[in-house]
Length: 336
Image (cartoon, rainbow, N blue to C red; front, side):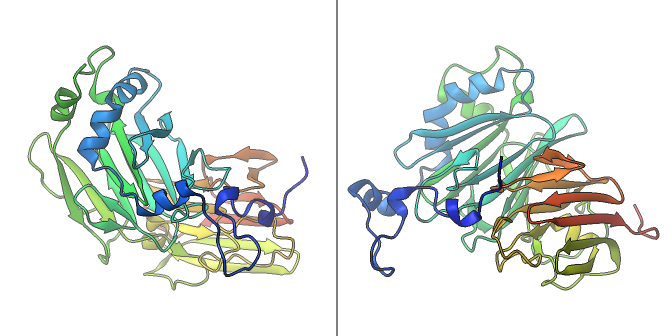
């Protein structure tokens, strides 16, 4: 299939597109209602969808059950996430969780689930949208790591991520309030602006049965944000105009590095607009570096095979449209 220009699908919802005068935007009545609608609180949203969450959690294949609920309490997207799977959220038609509202970016969020020490851990990043999401306690955040249930809001939408492993098959409580009470309490830890050596967060002692949700800094922009500490890996971007070599520190790659043709994640020359505005996230999770395609229009390939989320090997090369390649190499002197 031929590559498509990103501009062809720049606005996924025709009802949100400007018409006529570029300074005029026409919205239907439902559009006006959306602008005034507020997201449901986590408790209210959970009670409305707990049966669907239970059905998703009942699958032995799923590590985390994920659901998006609009301000009216309607489920707009749902899925079960397996170990290593990524989920991109926004109003672009390529996003698996499509949230068709004017205050949601084309590609707003990326989530990733990894089973660590036998339990699923959910990571959620804002893709430098300029509109951070809010965690359950009402605090805005650009990135979080959740070692247990995670409830956030973006625009009018409530997003719920519930580990399926917490309930054995057939043990999901039938009553919504009972299911809510069965969830472990959440404790929030602030790590924004903190520096650390290595990708692991500082150990914080929690009471038994409490889930930790750690707020982190947003992903960095390749070639814009300066390295934070010694170089740990290099990322080389090559396109028809030449190549640029970037060194990234452990801190940067652990936060994540965004690549794309938007000003929020520049990667180089793309006169045809084939590279998406937000195309790719490179991020270190534990000892591994992952490449996560952020619902790009024309995809990301490795040795000719399309990838959505994959562990990068040293000296790997990723193929983007427009004859652009991204080469990753861990430096020989980089520590664990």
